Length: 192
Image 1 (tube, helix red, strand yellow):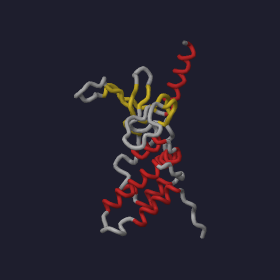
Image 2: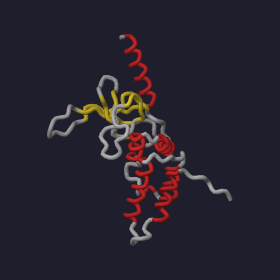
Image 3: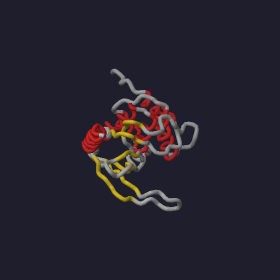
Image 4: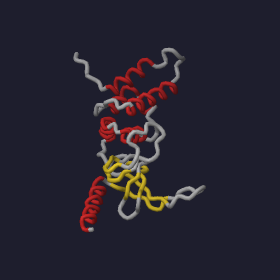
């Protein structure tokens, strides 16, 4: 029997899964936190992911217990924010959704690894990222549909001290919508 070659990211998570709780009492909570931390480390450290890694995490390491109620969107945001393309692509493959790539993307605030923070000429969109949308200024990605067909982005009222921002408009945006908006902007810019 030939053993399947595993990605470095998978090997790290397999190591944590196999060797956790050996020096302590058993705790599902500790194991779940350890697996989540290992996935964050693998992404932030720039470890390579295979396309099927997130599916393997679900099957072999019960990631439903530790990936979170958001379906792992925070890991995707981290992968895009830190520039770990293999992790982002593995997540997209697992979710069966295309990459939503827009212009002038700002990845938002992030208190961890700062590499690459700042506006990016063209980038994948993830929850918490903002980008210009048509005539509505910057909008913020708040979620992706379960089928991966569209994302939801919101425009907000102007921020004022001690006030909660209010959603002024909500958009359902597809990859095709983003491409059409890019084309219209290029046409407008070439005419000016």
